[in-house]
Image 1 (cartoon, rainbow, N blue to C red):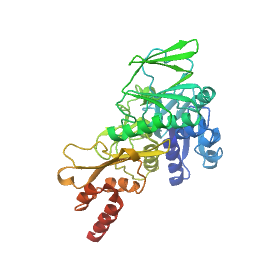
Image 2: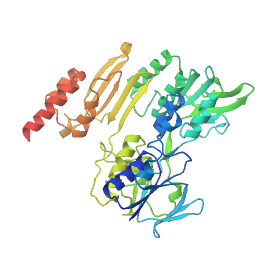
Image 3: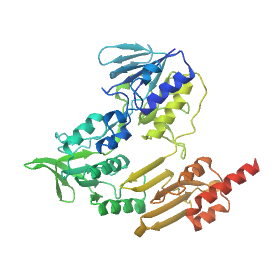
Image 4: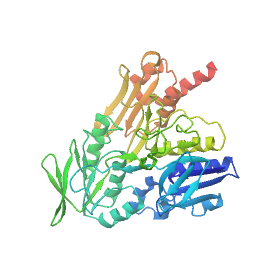
Amino acid sequence: MHHIIIGAGPGGVVAAETIRKTNPTDQITLIGDELAPPYSRMAIPYLLVEDIEESGTFLRSTSHYKDHRIDYVQGRVKSIDASAKTCLLEDGTELSYDELCLATGSTPISPPIEGIDLPNVHSCWTLEDARQISALAKPDSDVVLMGAGFIGCIILESLVKRKVNLSVIEMGSRMVPRMLDENAGGLLKQWCIDDGVNVHTGTKVNAIKESPDGMLVELDNGESIKADLVISATGVRSNTAFLEGSGIDIDEGVLINNKMQTNLANVYAVGDVAQGMDFSTGEYTVQAIQPTATDHGRIAGLNMAGKNAEHNGSLNMNILDTLGLISTSYGLWMGVEGGDTAEIYTPELFKYMNLRFGVDEESDVLVGATTLGVTQHVGVLRGLIESKIHLGEWKQRLIDDPMRIMDAYVASTQELDNAV
């Protein structure tokens, strides 16, 4: 049995390792399209502040793949012939497979604005991007960061540590708008401003223009900001173009079932390229975070190796450290219509917690949560949401004091154990 995995990020590597652990004799080929060994994009900010060298971003040691008899091929897949079960690489190489796993990840979206293709405008997605940014983001240089989402805020911290003059432009009304509500996003903005970052929310970049001193970033509020470097962190999209004509069903990403299978039984998809079930809503979405990729990779690897593994859906889960201020969001953090809410909001201390409950028969079930500046016991929020435990009288106790989440978890799980 020959398993080909296209994509050498965390999802693809975990899929390959899972197959090898389960089936010691099967042939495994892992294909990556970058010159570097498989690495983690989430480690790039640490590279930018020189906490690690490039080798520190690598997912495994250089000998790991050979030691585990995983053939690592550097190349880009041009197309898939699902009927012939072959992959065609851009250099003309054709590889045959019995089972295929798509782990091709995503690509940064370039917003349609004038000047986005200027030489000193970069994404922060690859090791080559990091090299370019490191050369330009010198102390006291003027840097504009477009986007204050999850990825943008990770990059933000590394830029502050490089001691640049940083301006952040976010078109949403708050920072990290897909993770934090108005209260939490507003507190995060003030925290960054207090640390010397110039943050514009509810603002768009109209154009980036060359000037005698470098570049000028023109905003829709009429302001212009001088820049030696512009970094675009305005979102990503799944890498699916090479699948055109393959017969594999695609929407926003590659559509998969709870076994990570596509509409073709011997083709699987994981990570940023996969559109799988959301734990909270049951809808099919692309969840572009590394924990989902590795979880997908494990499930796909088990099924490709002949096991019967099912996925319960990906829980929306984000944990972010921005200049020392920790924020988290889980599940339906924005709430559901008619559901109750418990909240702590202490802006002078940069502390916030919001708990969201369900409706009808799940009115005492925690379905989502947001925290900022609160770190004690927040990990149990995931457990409460994923277990769908009925809190009973503890719902009202949490409404009275949301900080009692650990007490609620212990009491509710004990009651559940006693009932069993």
